[in-house]
Length: 97
Length: 477
Image 1 (tube, chains in turn orange, purple):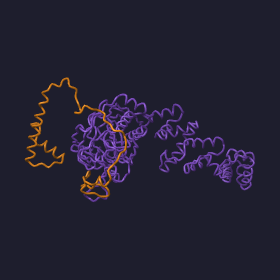
Image 2 (cartoon, chains in turn orange, red):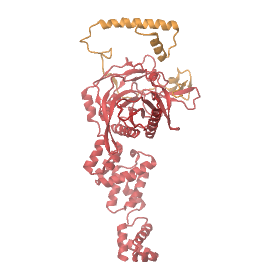
Image 3 (cartoon, chains in turn blue, red):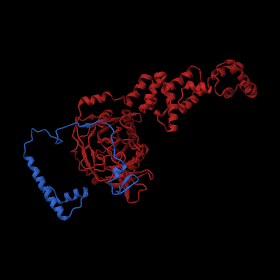
């Protein structure tokens, strides 16, 4: 087992996912299965293959520094469950204590 | 016996680039707009949108990196930095992790007259986050403005080469000057276009191992940086002196209370799970592009400072002050072009010009007159049209109205009186009115002459030629 139950709990916490005991166990098993499957790739001889950082064989896709249209404030806030003074209102996340 | 400690500081400086549009979309970057009006589906992180890299932001990053003596990468890419905080609508920030745009540079600072090279570990490009308002928003909520989200931001990470809070301030100041010269950013700490975090640790002098560091945030001015670091160094010393251990954590500077306060444990916060940004293809930076940017790089402050000393014979101090900003150095150079007495111009720029700007809290670019007007003013003194004292009065008027010095002298009738008979009449009147002072002078009191000359200047509202007045008195006494 490459991935422990603790790893799953840790990642779930970082991703703010609330998981039941059953889900936790199922995910631990599934993640390990995925890793085992991926290990098959390790059987390939990649000695002469250059490393790659991206799946697309493209580089340098740029746009010019030109200003275009923005959304109206009402449009930007349309999906916000709560708003005030043109801003989105969110629960406060305390950085200090 | 108390242990001597060595201070070890590294700075992480974030600088907003002054491109017209954002990093990955075409929203404007201008400061101070109504909340959430400079946003679009891309910077709001709506599903299905695709970011596209602003070429100018990459160019500016390379320009800044070259000015900081860095190596520009041949191959670079963007990564996702994952964290939950409501200033980011996507729950990740597009940043750079293992392949930054540039590495391995340095900034030279001068500490007590000695030059020190401070290493730059890396310069990378990322997107800025939005702004959270906490004040007056109710106890349990914050307000989010996404206007700043996606503005191109570079992070400049120094090596832990700084050995005191003062060195940290000098480094930051130099960094700001250099970046200002390159023109890639406004570098205004008050407007948040330059922000600084610090990693601070201490170790017994002579030790090779680093002590446990703390990260200090929320330092909103140059002075705050020096103060916060000084406080943090003392705090760590006290902990070690008590035989306790410094805890690795993030601490915020509280400017009102002048202390640092624990914000959160560092380990947890730094679990960012970086991975390559699949929506953006990598960058291959051609050497031709780097060279082209290098060629267009203006002279940096150190070079200009050296040139003023070497070519114009200015004192080191003058040269340093005059090159403290590119605009000031340009202004000075333009003045000297029209009036080649380098030291005279320097005295006026450092004295009158900077004095006026500091008093009014203005920038050199706010002056309503041109460099050639200051040159013109100095020529008026040389020609004897006005005295040095009147020139200062004309200067103030130039600052107010932006009019040419010749026009001001004409309009206000400030032309120096050089007609000998006209002044002689006033000299004789002053002698008549002050017989006692005249006696004092004849009796050997040199100082009395000053008073008499002063009376003439007063009567002519400063317009009499002082040398002439002096001569006329001496002839008569």
